[in-house]
Amino acid sequence: MNAAISLCIFCEMHGPKIIFTTQTYHCYDNQSSEKSKFYGPKELLKQNQSFFENNQYDCNACQSMGNIKFLSNEHETRTSFLSAQQSLLQDVGNLLNHACIRSLSCEVHPGKEGVCYFGDEYRGHVLSHTFTLKDAQARGFRRWCSFIVFMRDKQFLLNMWPFLIDNLKEVIKELQDFAEKKYIIEETECPQRAVRLKKANNSNSNTNCTKQPRALSDITNEKHVFVRIHMWLVWILSAGGRHFVEIFPMSLLDDELNYDMLHHFGGILETEEGFTLINAKPLINMNLSMDDAIDLEFNEIVEKSIIVILKKLKNALVKEQFRQLLYSSLTGVQILVRGPKIQRLESLYGLSSLIPRECRRVKSQATEYMDPNICNFIGVDTSVAVPLSCTNVCRLDIIPNDQKINKSEAHMVKWAGTLPAKVPTLMTKLEKSLDNEKLENSVLKAQFAALHEEWANIAKVVHAMRGRGHRGDLPALILSLGAGPHDKKLLDAWSMGLPSNPA
Image 1 (cartoon, rainbow, N blue to C red):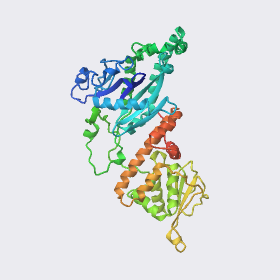
Image 2 (image 1 turned 90 degrees about the vertical axis):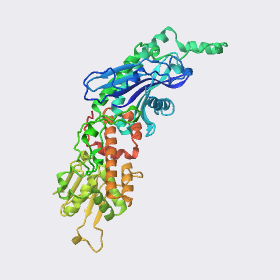
Image 3 (image 1 turned 30 degrees about the vertical axis):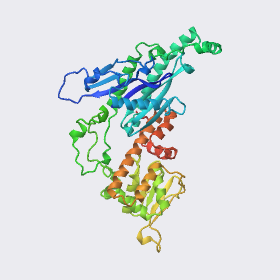
Image 4 (image 1 turned 135 degrees about the vertical axis):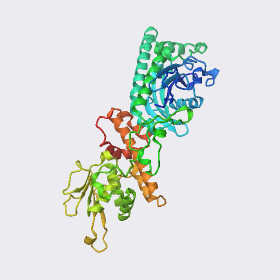
């Protein structure tokens, strides 16, 4: 996993400081089978931390490790995990220092202790977990700390939120247990609250020297605490690299583009700041696009464009009725289409393509009405009896030309529900795109595919967090993903197609 994980601490003398950082380094020379001492740039092992530190910050809490480094190797994957006080890459180190300050100052969880996300495309993306360690000599008898996970890829970082938080919480719990034991011993020997009250009442208290903040090894009473942290973070980076793979969203690739499989999926893709794109195995058919892999229900209209179908449907309906169809399709309300076969298939095909395949339960040529629990998209002939419109069923009636009365509308939507004051974000973006006459169909196709991938990913992450019991972290996670309370119905509906027990 290409990430940098740092442990930050709030020094009472010098503010937020990074005291430990672990990074991954890869070697892609597959022709050599020899084991190496280090699979990254060899000069990093000889590099000291002097260019990061200023002499005025020379205190026990800030200078945790000095020039000591810890190194672990995975010879099978030719990967090294190197830990030092600061990142040994100066540009990454500067970004981490900036993230450290934000993690322990302005970017805090509503309850101060907890998880939050911040970042942008220029300074990278950061997952921060703030916590405290008991310290009998600290202000308030506790020391503020945080773990920050730094990545360049926002979506990949947020997809890994459940995995990272689960494991970082285990690390934090063990550190807190160490600190708790030391705190109890010190308070038993000499209660610090009484000592401080006595000093406060002493007229000569101004002459008393304040003790320097203690190092983490003193707070936890664990001599090899940094070795333990190194091994914890190495496991997280290693396991993350094995189970989470960065891939290109296949639905964004046009059929005419010729991608070199060896270059993009088996070669080296190096990025700036010493990061490298994880090699992705060709798990997905390169020719797969959003218009392929269609249910057998739509064999007769397989060559028709979804964008053209939606535009045609939009023009045939009053604006409010089209919005009702969009909202119902995205939020799990059953879409019932009654009319001629081809027009019925087209409408169902266009509307059902707006949601993930896992969530689609389509019966395009049903001979009788079926309950929403059986199918969420159903098409019937005009002779089939259907229920009256209600909040759970949105009905689209397509009237054949030979049955039209005078100049009556050929398409009518009947739904007893009402649109909320603020519709889901995805619906708003789809509407704006369809209303923009300057966008060609090919551009709309790519944009719809990108939006589809984005919100499918958001639904998967939220579903995984909910399945792991992290309901307290959900509001912060949803906001970090660019969603809000008005997107809840959409996310709940899209989660219905995912496994009940997410890994």
